[in-house]
Image (cartoon, rainbow, N blue to C red; front, side, top):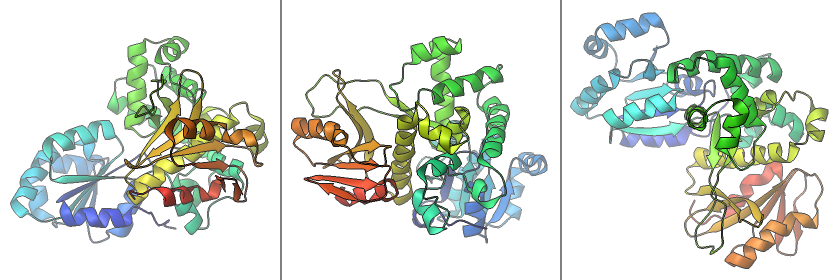
Length: 391
């Protein structure tokens, strides 16, 4: 079955104003399915098919001449030289939205596209399924722990496969295929160990030197490997907020995973009871919610940037949503019951910024309002955006 994706309208808008639209995102996030389902009149070509790749390589000019103008080219990073031919073609035709490109390796793809198709191509990212997409398809699991373990990759919902089996295969495929293509990493087992070490530091300040020591690699190699994981949409860095605060602030970013199913698999957590009592449950739940904010902004073209706040005395707010005119603080707590301690970070933020009170997202199921604090259940996190003025 097909699960409707929230980015469809954005892609339709991009097709009106750009000759080429590039669909990026992690492996198996649903890019190909999205393109084939929503643009069935476009002829599809997959460059991971060696025969298709060779035919196009042999004579790209004839390929474009003999095929319809509306096409989809998947895994285009396999033949980056093709982009020069696309540039010539779109400049000649001057038609909008006829060529759709996709690929999983943003590091390779975006660099080549930006160099060759500057001003001619627009980007849209397809991330794992969001709460909203899962809810509309009636797949959202009301138990937060089970939803964390299952994650958001579409195949887990459309195939008869357990998250444990799926993600173990995903990790093997990712390291054996994608990593070899992006970088010549000789020790794949060491790279997998590195991913596990990153998972153990989720939601914490990123110390690359310490991480490198634990992984047995140099800091430069650790930084390079993190960049690979970022480029292929496995992890991302959340930067600290530093504007107009007037305090000594922490400058190190935090690291999160785009998908909690992958995260918990790397941590060898496959059972709800183990997850509930795991020493990292607070960090994992924080990753769970922060990633949903990332998806909400990506899927709905919300003009906002995400940060966290922390000073050198340990005062912290989990998330700052900066829309330019508004900086909205959000605290994230895994507990299913409210505690006054939840408001500590928000109270400190409001003292130094004199801004909007903010929200608390928690693991419960009821909305609570206490004085000027709004506490939302995890399934309703998107209501926070009602207070974002630049949407």
